[in-house]
Length: 297
Image (cartoon, rainbow, N blue to C red; front, side, top):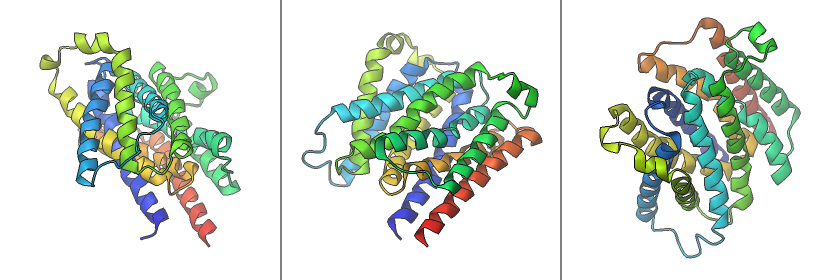
């Protein structure tokens, strides 16, 4: 199996696992401080990634040179996760997931600035379609709400986090010096854990961990293992094999996965009109994948 195919499969798994964090996060976002939650999540993720690294033979000599690189990446990822849970306090998971699909459009700008990756015509069309689908969901298929720019507070907060995520993606390729995805992930979550622990120490100490609802613990372990440790490995694995814009194209599947998660959790599906916006995001993904096939030919 060639490296590009492995990269695409990695991002397919990434989108499904990320979607779970939106739905589970929506169940517990008001139960705990987002920064305290994310700090503990990063430390748990560091344990999981560290065990994985040791099982694969360790990190190797010189793996953590220039630690400032990990501080940059950990800071960017920490901002994204904290603001995601802040947004989920008031915004429904499907709407937050729709905001997430604006990331590929932002990634293309950062990828050009940092890596000089050029956007093709077909990719531009696909990203425009995907952004249209995202806006459709964000404004609840209401043209008047769009014209008034009636964005919910939760969606607006998470949008700032998505800017951080969009910058993170090309920064991985810019800062990587040949380290494996597991090594780079470990450095990232350790740095993120340190930064967030400093920032949210008072909230961490004040949190009544022993009496938190079970949904918080389920979400904590899911997000630490699947939506942090596993997805960061998948994302960094794919970023080193695919252009940044195509890596993040898979975020267009996130609203669809969230709908599946919401139905599975008994929260029901969104109205049919909103599903039309989700369909546009899926169309955008297929256009980007077709572009990839055309380039190979």
